[in-house]
Image (cartoon, rainbow, N blue to C red; front, top):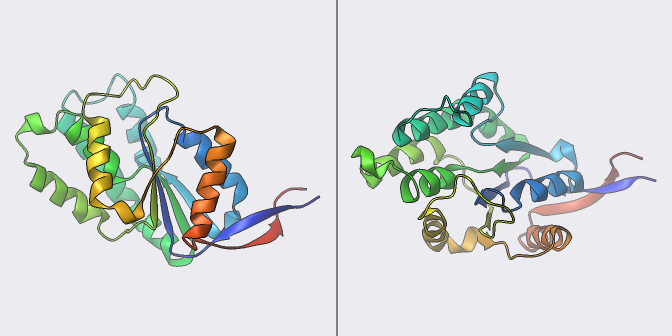
Length: 207
């Protein structure tokens, strides 16, 4: 029996953001299983789509990562910049689903990290981020702030930082409630339909 896969409108950008261990990966996997793969590109930032950024991400997640918080975030931004041509190309013909984008850089790097201690101003840090990301505007940002497991990267200020960012862009932001995985997926699909991001269903998938 054939499954039916939803299609996303070309040019739509869906972002999953929030705390680690809060259910983002589970919901991205569920969304991937519900969508026609021909209509969407999934990308995790900063590991991205290139061998270079995947290697850098491995270092950033290991004991070999830089000790400087600023150096860590600059490495993240280098990965973002390296992947930008592929992300922009995807938006030209497909939808794009991002597992993290620049909000993570601010939440974990500025509000909950040590970038401030480097002496770099918030305005300069933001200007650098926007020089990379200003060309991609999300259709909706799903924010997960209720961790189901202990987040080893959590620091005081991270959640507060996300809430500041949400207040700056309330129309595009959806705070994901603490629900079961099935109910959360249903809520996300309903929200995509409400925003007219999903265009239709068509037969597809595996038998």
